[in-house]
Image (tube, rainbow over the protein chains, first blue to last red):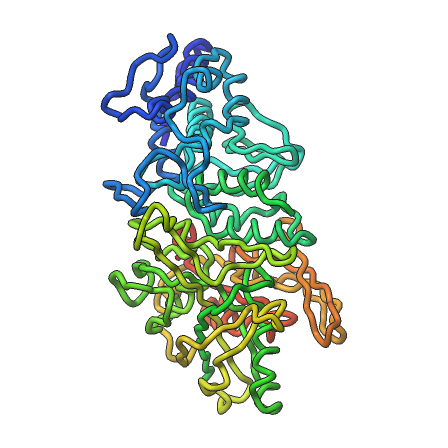
Length: 253
Length: 299
């Protein structure tokens, strides 16, 4: 899935990694794609992501082909929660004071941290046609793919890695809470991991189910078993990662 | 001749119990109230998988094709080995993309006195925003039975209707009604997709029991024909409840896949349907054999 190996110029790399977190700002501001602005708050936004990383991240969560409306009475960028069944409270468009930290930062590693922790990007879906998907996790997945592709890894090399120490790896971590983190990584590692497959597709459930270890307390906690049971049913990656976050923070036990 | 009787129940009330499946032990226990003891003793039950009654399209590996309304609410014809697994994979890849498939396929949770209960139906579309656009998806439980003596199968419909699974049964939770049932002879199934392959992958449809506290049941090693070490397999504990006594089981968790190192894949596939290892009678150790090149896209 990668093109030629990218330039080793650090500044090119930095600007590409910054650009990936700014590539869908028009969704946060509630603009149509055709009218997407080139700059926002004085920085370049809505630029294409190199090496096909955006296209591949989209394929992890949305079907190919022409999109169709999947929820009859919901046709907005406001994300529908899989946990509650209703739109999340704060819907787009967001004003500049809320968005600025997610857009104007120019240190790529700080930017990655902010996207891991953002609630704002989690209020928006990837596409109005698929309102349970999450722009927050689509963007983190796009960044992880681009960073791996830039290192010369093909999609077929990539693994979902479970990090029970909760360590965050710049651009590679696609989910993190206080207890654990999940990374996409093409390199070697000594943590439990499983290959994503030969090509990008909606394979969350299959990947999660086949992991040699996962971080939930399914032996002892009924709520962890319910969470795990639902994680084995969801195919879209951004929907699943957002559900994991919503369940961990939103379910009283 | 080995007869499998597929049974499809409709959930009539929320279910408080195992969120992965209704255990085969729970199914056999419920049937024990309905059947003469000599028939009941010969029965083996699979775990019951939760299935949403929704529009769907048959996967390429299935002998049928096309789109069906409410595919998950009944039992399609079974001609091939792969047909048996259509409804026995939690991700239900047959669900249509033109609908919110992940929302329809996840369980809504209702907390009932501290227990997370799975709802018996999923309601989409808020009434205030969508007058008459509310859409309800019912949930079903798919399981199958077989018997030591072939003359016990099929179990009559009247014995399969009106059962209850899970906790708080005195309050009506876990009530099901019989929706559909059909008998399949394993020997008459088409295994040509497996016969055409050279390498195979085993996927654990239900957990495989390694160690058990249950008296007189043997601990198991992983079979020699699994090309994997035990330390590479995710384990999970299960509980077996009998006569109000709880026995712990250490299992290889379901959902994982391992390479097949044996030389009789068809026989292994047939044995995997009747399940292997300790507590196979109660649903543990169900295994699906798949050609290796197809295992990326199991459906």
